[in-house]
Image 1 (spheres, rainbow, N blue to C red):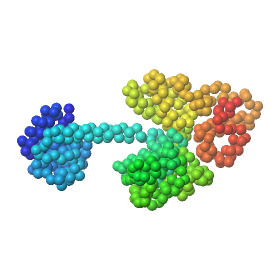
Image 2: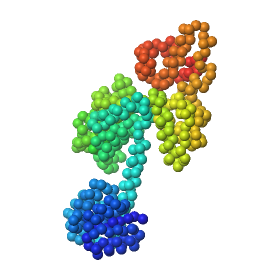
Image 3: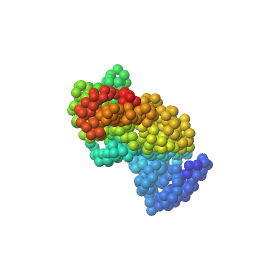
Image 4: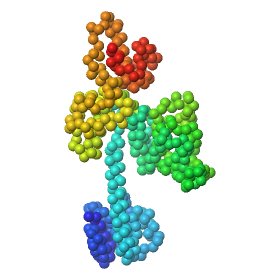
Length: 468
């Protein structure tokens, strides 16, 4: 039952309001002045407060200011027998839910109470949802690459530097962008997301910059674009590599001048926006093929953050798996399920072409279909065949693969076969990224290409082929 506190120095007003609200089923308590009322607010859990404006010791405006500072979710309805329009405006400006004149109209009063309580409920639910989302948006992992990303975010988030996030689909680029926003001075402002690949090329300018009524055939009313919506906050441009060239030129002007013009408009609009962009494409290659502007690239990439694929941070897979399982069980109302050590080791060895997103889907599948203790056998039963074919498990699961010295006539042949298996394993681990593979095994990229040609290695070849 909602609890309401009435603060007024006139006993007759308090009693009248209390009687009316009690008859409607509300729990009502009373305070004779602002000091007593403030103490009761700090000690109790009220859903709504009525407060007179003119009271001894502490007036209603001071009480309102204190509540707004410490309990902003608590709605306050101001009441006064000498209210003016200016006083009502000032009260609402300071955060009052509404202003009611004495004696109040009972029908209007009860409607105001219902609306105030509904608003309080929505505010509390929204705050709880935000806390839940924030918990679920933690960057999980203790690998060197993830520690480096977290350190970079801590250093650059408080600035307004533009950031370009690169990485494959499903690696968590959006999560990195959200962390940057939440740790910035703009966290109280909006974070507006735009997927540049999901918007038709003929509509992306309207989506970003807005349009005026009549700017084109379907523009039946004015539209506020994403830049204006993000004013005072962060604009996250996902898949920036898919933005059409014409829109890129307007984007460049917006970044250079901090101003935009709506489609069909003539007025310049000033914007205060931090831009964080992300892409799964090699923008330097896109620049060479004249699909992306070099000057825009330099504007966007003041800070570069690369998010590695799951194959490059396999040591994080057990922690990710257990966190996903915990969240999935909670969302389905299921008892917590555990993964055995060999199950976690098996998951860590699979090939994850879909990265974090694919891992989450597989964990959800296992949680639904398996028992309370998920084992290695469960993983092998429910994993997709493609995950097994090119995973580091392919050597472990096929006993004919281990190098058997009896199969070789001389040491050189044995050594070359071992080198071939090692290089192919590392190529799979780093998803055939030649630069990273060469860097991690300690040879030059050109030397790695020579090895591929020598051993006839190609993408899509599995470990069984390499050992055969």
